[in-house]
Image (tube, rainbow, N blue to C red; front, side):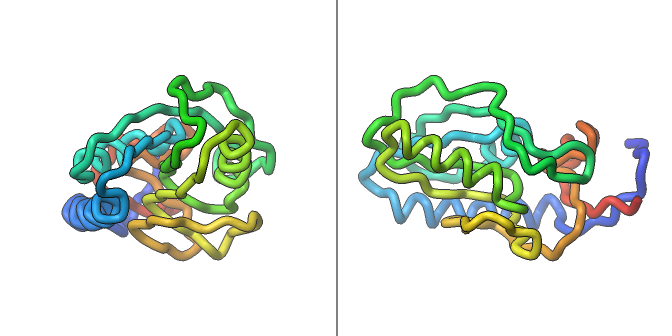
Length: 174
């Protein structure tokens, strides 16, 4: 595939698949006998969430919410919810699934919004965790990888809507 930028591979397809299976097994164990409702944060989480729900050996209901705080490589600091959830979740534990936990602003706002609307609890499930850039007081309950402060793409993560379809994760060399 022709690319606009140089991409340095950080995580291969095989490494990703193994880690997603591990997180899915942990969720299966932790939620055995309970209803699992996963809400994916679009657009970035769609690839991770698709693999994750198949790695969880429990009945899973899914929904999506669309929120954005990034434009290019910079967080705007403002969370814009463009599409809301559709399933009833009052009194239930929600697993909020995200591609990357970076500043934490988006997930912090979404978690508080879901709790205010009646969710019993909200667990954060993220593919990547980048703690060096955290500005909000939030952490992941489930995480595949912690990474350093690099701008990464692939496996659902984008740079101006490009590179989501890569089956690996790589650092964009600008």
